[in-house]
View 1 (cartoon, rainbow, N blue to C red):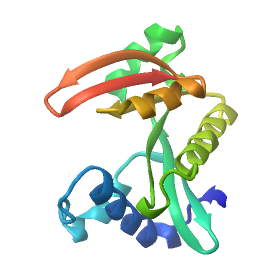
View 2 (view 1 turned 120 degrees about the vertical axis):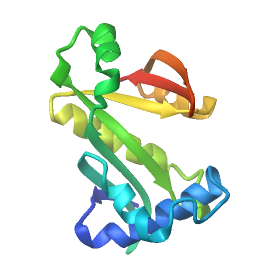
View 3 (view 1 turned 45 degrees about the vertical axis):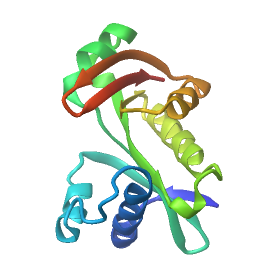
Length: 161
């Protein structure tokens, strides 16, 4: 397995992977976002770097780092005493449902943490309705939950690494 930076040629495979992953793990309706809108939805994010995990020529995982959500900057600053522009967020990551449990998500997480630190920033994450498994994994790699909030869309946990 290899993790590399995504290229524009990977876009279609990333969109297809996202859809399969979300249907398997979160949203039972495969058309929750109409297919013609899904690509634009995924690529509307303010990504700095996108990564893909590959097995052979097949994309089996995706993760990104992105500019930190300004809504949470004050909490991250309070927890770290760092400057406002010191944070890069670990954006979403997802894995081929047929390959879950094989360490792909962890590999993408480690690659993204390394990339953020190489850029001289502090890795942070916003997780929506995070499972205990995800939270425990974040703690295992040095994450610290600094806040948990309830919103109309579910609970949000803020992590600093």
